[in-house]
Amino acid sequence: MYDIIIIGAGPAGLTSALYALRANKNVLILEAKSYGGQIINAHKIVNYPGIEEISGFDFATNLYQQVKKLNGEVKYETVLHVDEDKFVTTNKGKYQAKSIIIATGAENRLLNIDREREFVGKGISYCATCDGAFYKDKVVAVNGGGNTAINDAIYLSNIASKVYLIHRREEFRAEEQYTKELKGIENVYFILNSTVTALNGDDKLESITVKDKDGNLEDIQVDALFIAIGQEPKNEIFANVVKLNQFGYIETDDGVHTKTKGIYAAGDARVKTLRQLTTAVGDGSVAATMAIKEMKENE
Image 1 (cartoon, rainbow, N blue to C red):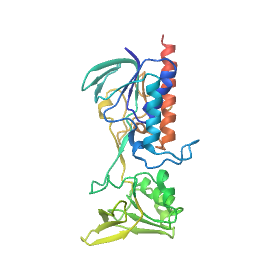
Image 2 (tube, rainbow, N blue to C red; image 1 turned 135 degrees about the vertical axis):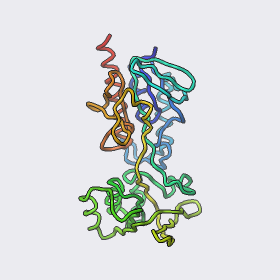
Image 3 (tube, one colour; image 1 turned 90 degrees about the horizontal axis):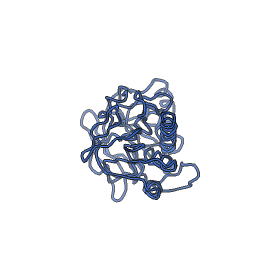
Image 4 (tube, rainbow, N blue to C red; image 1 turned 180 degrees about the horizontal axis):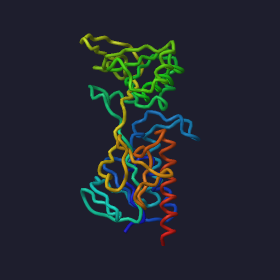
């Protein structure tokens, strides 16, 4: 019997573990892939309070080492099922806890074209607020047509010299107030009814190939492409113990509480207005603190 089982070893999960371990709780962290989550792929982090600049790999590794120094137990296993009695079944075993924190994050939707992963951190980004500052006075493109893409383009228009917005349709899915604002910005150029079909460059992104609805191809020189076509949470296996919204994110009450007592959600896996490193670690600390507090009340 563990005090707390944490599912996911990204910033939210590792922060939860840090707080729980410092409170002398018996903690198990279950992670399907590797520690760090999405942040481990960030070339540079420059918006985390108190740290002027650090790579995503170094940040995640430092946090992981903090947890290991406190004797945090990490098992690389895939969670298959969670029930209301706090039993967690994985591909290798079955565990039980007094509390569970779900911190499985969300994955960016990919364009799924050649060299996309190769150019991550070298011109390809999925987060304008994270990486936009690296492209001051440069030419960038945003791919997408929802609120995130439109707001990314607005944000980048204040940093970059030119912003291309590429969308596969004529109409946008974003709210009208955002699209109206974007259309009034002079250094934003629209490429509609078009898709990105190729990423070009040697050791970094230098241009993108765009295909319009008639099949015509055009190469556009850009320093960066911000892909904003959505994220995909992986929460289906928790649907029996948490409430999911229409997009698959976990709905919570008062921040981190799910519909099942003793089961909490932290980080990008839950419904929230801002998915950033700061909010992930904030969620992790709150989830662990709430779990510890409520366990004590139930003793």
